[in-house]
Every structure is written in structure tokens, then in C-alpha cells.
Length: 102
Image: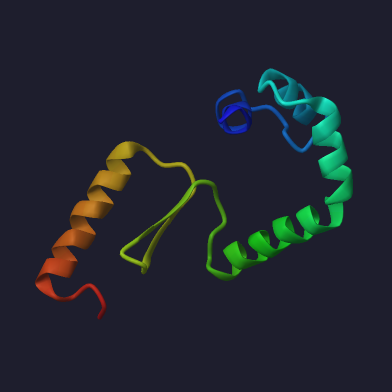
């Protein structure tokens, strides 16, 4: 949660090692253990990040957050709550009318 707050709320650059270590400290995580785990798994972690990125772009996701409604409708990027409410109402109406998959 602290990492997400640092990125989304505080607009901190969590790709920076210094910022990431600060968040680790703020979270009460042992820095030595974190650094050791990071070093031992760096290639695997990097591969996971790139795999997730490639999967997202292949699905048309180009923003954070990304929400998929009813396994077929994508809302990508930060939008107002009202946008989600309108989208849910619209897609619910389509589903109930039987036209959602057409």
C-alpha cells in the first residue's frame, strides 16, 4: 500500500532506487533483506515486469489503472468515479437487453 500511495498519491518516482528504498524503510521492511532479495531475483523480476507490460499493451491497456467490465469493456487510465458509474450502468443495460456481446 505504501508503494501505491507513493506512486499514485504522492507522485514519487518509484523506479528510482533511492525512492524505492525510502518506501521500503517507511514500510518497516528490513532494507538488507530487501536488497538481497532484489539482487538475487533481479532478472526474474525484470522479466515479470516486461511480460506484464507486453501483455497489457497487447490487450490495449495504455494507462493505469485499467478496469475491464464484463470481460470485454476496457476503461484505461485515471477517470472520474462518475465515468465508472456511467460505464457500469451502460454495460449493465446492454447485458440485460442481450446486446452486450454483439
